[in-house]
Length: 263
Image (cartoon, rainbow, N blue to C red; front, side, top):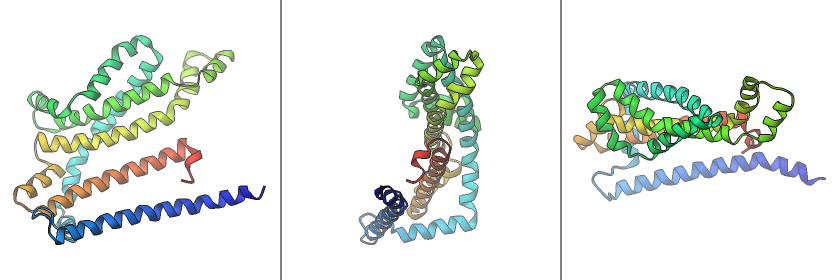
């Protein structure tokens, strides 16, 4: 009986040690980066300290904030549109076989398609404005969200559905009180993965369609051989996307996965 409290008390310490290991790995990476830049292994690979200085320079002059404001517009619009369409389509595919036969193959093909090959076609049809970039985000985010929602609904616990029917629950009650609540964890995980794909889509669009926002900073500093600034921008978007996904994962754990809250 005395072992249970000991295990419970050890869980917070385990989470703290895991955090320290993660911080140590980041510090090791930054240190190796600094050493490699000081050698140097390549003229296009400046030290980590130079990239930190370049980051603060772009942050202080406002160029980085302006670039992120431009980049986040198609990202937010595309992710919101993908979330609404993808979740609705996924639920419909999970509930209706006829919708599944029509929709699932299309989303599977769209997920497997090489996006870089589709972007020139989008540019030809919609130009180089906000619409084209938003569509690039949707092409990557929408299939992930739709297919995760579809699998979540189609794998709902059948005993819960049978229980609802035994209590003479109507069709809408079965959907809103049984199916959607039970599928919510996987649907939210699909939204998180869709946002991750959306980050890839928006940067790819800015590099291939027209250089604006973060993609413009990357392209410009690469063209003038200002590699410290280029790597600072690349590192900033990686950190920003990782922090966004970490927050969403924490929200997912809090709302839908209480058994993992101590991790």
